[in-house]
Image (cartoon, rainbow over all chains, first blue to last red; front, top):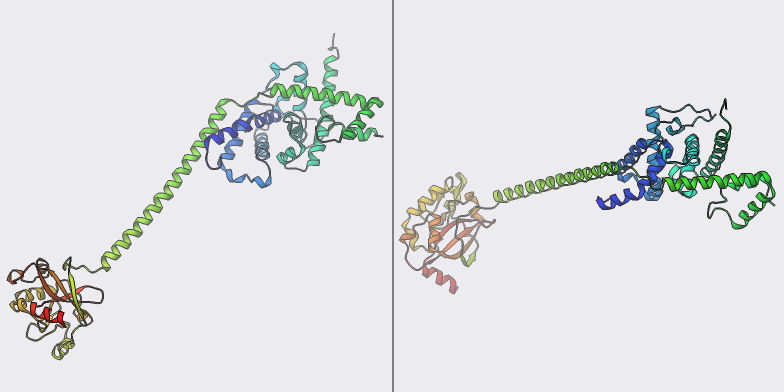
Amino acid sequence: MMAGDEDAFLQLYRRKHPALYRFALHMSGNAAMAEDVTQEVFMALIRDTGRFDPARGSLGGFLFGIARNHLRKRWEQEQRFVPFTDDRDDVRPAIAANGNGRHADRYDDEATARLRRAIATLPENYREALVLCELEEMSYEEAAAALDCPVGTVRSRLHRARALLTEKVRDERRVDRAPAVGE
Amino acid sequence: MMDCSQFRELLADLDRPGVLAAELRDQALVHAELCGDCGQLLTESESLDADLRRLIVKDGYSRAAMRVEANVLKAFRDKKAAEQRQSMGWFAAAIGVAAVVLLSLGFWLYRGLPRSRGPAFVHVTHVSPPSPVPPKAAADSDREPQVAVQGAGSSDVVRGESSKSAGKLAADSSTLVASDDSAAFIPLPDAGYPATLDDGAVVRVEMPRADLAAFGLPVEAMEGDGTVRADLIVSADGTPQAIRLVSQDDANATAQR
């Protein structure tokens, strides 16, 4: 790929882009933004191939790092976030929680839709860990490389994310089961 | 025996392959069976895992649109083309520099090499050091640049400021036809500075008669076959400076010596 082999680049794109796209989709909750971010990741790779150093980590981790940076840039640019009531400063709920740009709700069953909404409202750091370790089935080490943080941090974030997610799903179930006002 | 805090610590890793030792996992499961709250947590965790797996399956075929691939591929091709253009530019620049260097070298060599219109093929028969310049000629040469030539007579010393006129002068001399060792050297039209004659070697050569015309000599007045013998004064850089014809008798005597 570095030597300019188009076939190799195409293979790399086809192998890596689905995970990057899904990551961006789960993080943003917006299919258009996820596509833009996926495209930007590979554009950055084309522009500056020499930036990737195999000695510092896997290519996957490198690409996920670029994706995270682009997502953050997008969030900073657009400033279209839903107010989040959590006490954390770094909370950036996905746009999906807003109802705009939901990516798969119309095809989801109730439980999946509930889970998607709950994931979208997780704090960004927790959501990253959950998406990479649970939805992309990365090991702690791989996720740590992608998130550029220690393995222990990934592990604790994942545990916290799962605990929060369990609470949210439980709450949503409770709301769904509760009789509507006036009934 | 595991307690609840330890169980909660391990809960997220229970289903992760290769994270927990089998013994630790068994202890956690035993604890969940005995502890109602932890059992409830385990049930919720397993339910979450099932939901997450369903989400993985649902999103498993999620792909960016084909236009993303097309855009990325176009960018890759553009970059590659730009790099090729750049490398071609460097190649062309290198070729240009090499051409300039070669041209300069060729020009320098062309300027530096003597331009002789002498015979293309000569047969060297004898080489001898230059003859001493006669005292008279040496005295004359102190006054002005002249070609010092061997021999005597008014045509022995030829003014060096115009080799062309010297060539004409030589061409008028009929004594050249039957010259010998005492005959005068005639400066060649393209000879260099006359003083170089002092340092040149005398080379006896056989050369085609036709080539004598290039030196401005009267070839039509000469007798004999296709070649003639001549002495050339050759300067240190190999350029013929002057010529004189050698009679056949002299040539034979020299060869016998």
